Image 1: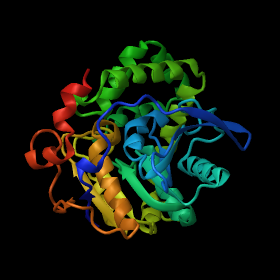
Image 2: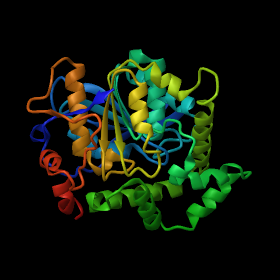
Image 3: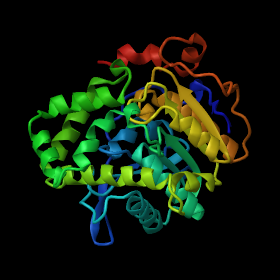
Length: 355
């Protein structure tokens, strides 16, 4: 493990809030998978694939994919049962990983630069470990790798639901009690440390995403069954056998960036550093004042770390004027470290993004 480097902010595109990237239906194994495309803005861009977390969708990557479009020709998937994809037969980490592999093979774009947030982090670790031929680099943002102390996660309050027969019906009933605006606000409060960083456009899009969920009769079942599958994978990871996510992480050989938010309320904040220690060729970026979805909350900072990773992986060398943070230091894009704010521009832009 080593500290992540940061690409110079001045080399990133000017700040703007793009609309969601256009999407299309891709039929894989008889079911529809929804995929959004972020077209490259420069010749020679390399293929990338973005995988969202539990309850998320391909829209979670809009800002980051746009910032990286000069280097990456991006696609973002809606996992089965989420976003605009049709429901799946199984909602487990291996099943989702199989769908990611099928998409890469179907599109004939591999190897890709692979990104995963939360559940998507667990899924992409499995893909990188078992199909290294399909992966160039791996970026993990608050990866949902195993931890057992669910007091360190807001998701811990959902555990009793897994023991209730037909808990999916109870979840569907609960969803029906909340207006989309209220649910969207609750989701953002759980995932984001500083809501002033989220633009009004993104808030409205989040409400619309909730409306899509409400219209999908399968959504509650997909959410509960996916959460059950994720918890099961956590438990199996501490038992003998080859299915442990931590064992899979230890055999990932591609250059990897691990990003963690110190104010993450959904994944134990100790997981990101542990992942960086376990994955051999890894770089760690810890962000203070940031929650569970750093690619939404501070996309420019994440983009800078990704661009530095790409430069290193392609043997370009260190970024011009780039910097490397000490391994034990926490980066603070929240106003607590003026040096980093001056480079990222994230914190000073919050008021503009809020409206």
